Picture 1 (cartoon, protein in one colour):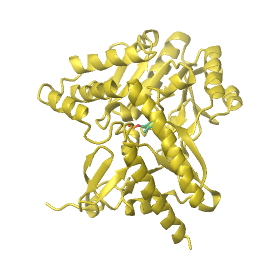
Picture 2 (cartoon, rainbow, N blue to C red):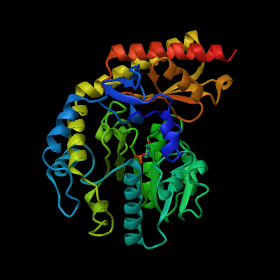
Picture 3 (spheres, rainbow, N blue to C red):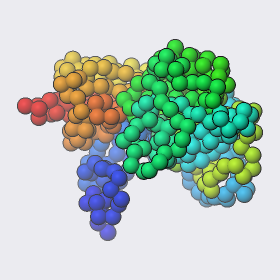
Picture 4 (cartoon, rainbow, N blue to C red):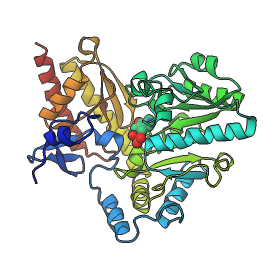
Length: 403
Ligand SMILES: *Cc1c(COP(=O)(O)O)cnc(C)c1O
C-alpha cells in the first residue's frame, strides 16, 4: 500500500489543507515523514502533545489499559475515569468533573450547564452568553456561534440565540453588555487561535467581579492554556481568579482524545440524570492516558521547566529578530508563544510555515500574522536550540524570497 498527500485530496473532505509531507513516526520532540526526513516539532499537535511523542509513561498507561478494558459506556463507571476525576478535583478548584472527547464538547457542556443552572434558579430570561470577539471555543454550532468569528459561524443558517460579544481585554465593553439576564461569560485566559494574546489580570479580575454582581457564571476555556502549558497546571492559577466552570482538553490527553469540564458541586447538581451525556465520555483508555499525563506534568520540576524553557525560546526568538527583523512582538506564557509579524510581512505567517517545513521544522500559525509555538512541555533544551536554528534559516529564506 502506498499512500501519499495526494490521497488526501482524493478521499478526504476538503476542510483542511495539510502540509505537503506525511508524518509517520515521532519520538520526544522529533518527527519523521514517509521519506525518513526528520523534523523538530514545535507545533505539538496544536498544544496537545504535552509530553512530546510516545512518552514512555503514556505508552505504558495506554498499553496497560489496552490489555484490560477499552470501553464500557456511561451505563457503567470505570476505574481510570474515577481516578482521573479524583486527581483533577485534588489539583484544582473543582469538586465535580464531566468527561467528554474534545474541547468543543467540554465547552458545549459548560455552556449548557451554565444556562441550565441560571434558568432553573432565575427563570427563562437568564440565558444570555457573553464571549469575546475572535475567541475560539470549538466547532460545534453552539461553540462557533459563541466564538464570535463570522468566518467560522456564517453560512450555516440561523445561529443559536442569546449570544453577544465584547472586546477581549476591554472591561468597559464587557460591562456594557452584562446584565441580570446574563447566564455566563466565557473567556480564554490566553486567546489561543486568535494570536496568542494573554488576558490582563485587571480584565479577568474585573470579569469575575461583574459576574458576581450580576449572578452570571464565569467560564474559563483552558482547552489551550491548561495542563501545564503556562507553567502552572491551569492559567487561572497564574491570575488568582477562580472560575465557576473550567474546560480542559488538548494537552489533557497528551495526544489521546479527551475533554473535561470542571465545576463546583453546587453547579454540577443542575445536570441531573438524562440532561447531558456522551457515549465515549470517561473512556477508560483516554482516562488512563490522561491520568498518566497529569501525574507526569503536575510536578514542580516540569512546571518550573516550562517557565525556564519560555525564557530560552523568547531569548532565541529575539536573537533571530535582531538579525532578521520580522517580528513586531513576542508574547504568550510558558510554552504557548506567539511571534507577531511586522506590518511589512503582515498576512504571511503561512509562507513562514512552508519555509519551516523545508528546513525540517513544524510550527503553527495563530491567525495570518502570528507564528505560534506550542511544543512539548518537556522538550530538551538541545531540541529548542536546533528548532530555533531551523526557524532562523526559514525566516532568512522567507525574507530572501520577498526580493
Ligand atoms: C482547540 C480549542 C478548542 C476546541 O477544541 P477541540 O478539541 O478542537 O474541539 C476550544 N477552545 C480553545 C481555547 C481551543 O484552543
